[in-house]
Length: 350
Image (cartoon, rainbow, N blue to C red; front, top):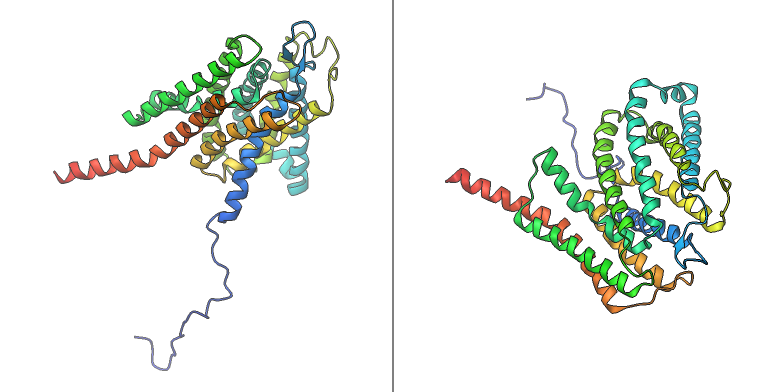
């Protein structure tokens, strides 16, 4: 009981009407906008790389006239400089000095080295693959991630999930076989396919490392971590650029045009947005967005005048099978978790 003479404060719905409510994350409309932006970045990136290729007058095949590593080198320099400028603008010299702290630099430099290998494999694979084929093959990350999780953490997939993963892989094969039979290159570019699979493996490994260590150093802003990534990233790409027989032999900017500059911008936007958007979008939306981007790329290659692709029902249907099988696998996770929970409760009661 309150002491005598003390009045109790009465509360009603108007008492806290001016108090702002706690944020529950991005609004529904904001999530939709971020999802659309994510799909756009994932679709435009391989499309503009594909558009930057030229036809070799001797062989009749498409390839890069410019040094493929020049755009990646350019992106690392841009990010390295912009990240430091953001640190100086937000925290002055004190925050700028924090970038060079030995422990995070050591960790993120290794991850940056592995990411650089992924960029090299990406450009090597895009030299012989179209944008849609590249994005289709990227869906193999579902299988590679499942195998990695099984080997590293012992996380098992259900029979249903393994069947859907097999369906994803078969649908990818159908798309590639259909594309090679209707294309002009006379077959599946095996080297390009292998480079994509290696790129996916590297990306999955980097995702695991980034998720772990970015949480360990979560007090650091992402722009500072990007600078730490780009130290070894730049040095690795610089070393690889001397092996292509083109970048420095022909001149760094040989073959550059507006489209190639667009590739540089695309690499930069993709690099920054990947870390920021994946911290906001959940994994389900991310995987669905990756799959939807396949369809966006397919239609871009049909309707944009720079490409010669035509609408073909078999190819369109194979793209849809890839997308639907990926979304089926992503959706199966929740179903399998509920089934496992039900089985566990049933065993506990028995």
